[in-house]
Length: 379
Image 1 (cartoon, one colour):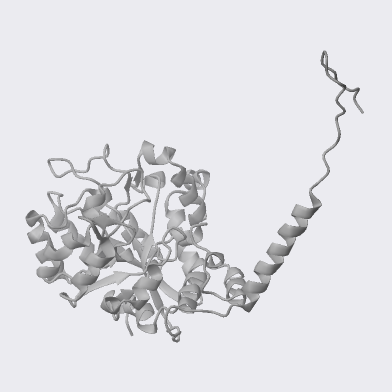
Image 2 (tube, one colour; image 1 turned 180 degrees about the horizontal axis):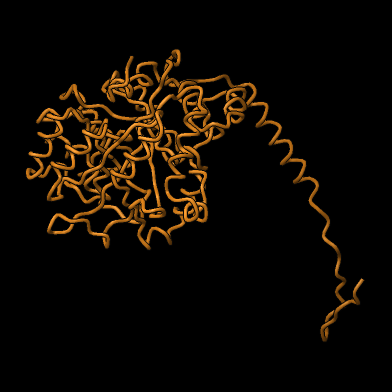
């Protein structure tokens, strides 16, 4: 023991070892045990009656990526590379930057195809290209583009794997946008993907009418991000307003509004409410349920499954690789029983885990089957 310390005019002070607070430990242990008992006692509480899972599910919303290795043409901005999300995405895809530099970006597509191939529930996934921002002359502006995944790279990936489908992406402000749509269709594209806040697209711009008419002619659905966009380093959030999709809908484009326009407000109104109103007007408007089980979207899946406007309009998607991150876990849900949580936790395939969790929460059979219909893959 060290000698006592003294100060002038004060009695000596003895240093004593602090004993652990055993009472606090016992209280914490008791609370944890009570929490487990409550978990065991709570039954499953799905948002709607559980229905069978159909065979041959297609994931409508699966991202592909690349860093430009192996001549892929992919591009990631310096700002995005410095962003903490970059490392998270690579890890979720199951690759490292070192591997990509050694083997080329095609490795990432191969890993996605292998994981889909190992799934018992999902037979195919639509892997998505992502066009960039255009400059005033209708050419790619790399200074304003966070991520660029060219159609040629995605089409080549799909050509190597029978369980992947081609989701094209064409910024309508390109000078050759219509020709690119023709090329995509000729190379097997099943839809066109936009993220308007990131690609700086105004969906209600009347200059896009010829583009929309070409989509109708080619029978290509438009999968367009709606709601808040938080996956990139910057975003023009106002372009995610579902109300801006009224123009393509009025021209007959089949539109799939991603994420039910969640977590955003436009002109003082929730994005989901604006989307629901459009649903009553346009029978060719759908919405996907990708990302709706993320911890930062509480209550969103419940709203999608219980609002009458969305009945018969939901489409299965995952937003892969985000389902393979800490954003999504069965442990976050109070509507799953403890047995269900353990069963889901033991599933290693991210697609099987996603399907089973959404099924347990009440996603209906038709929602799981609709992506195959929209992509022309229904038996």
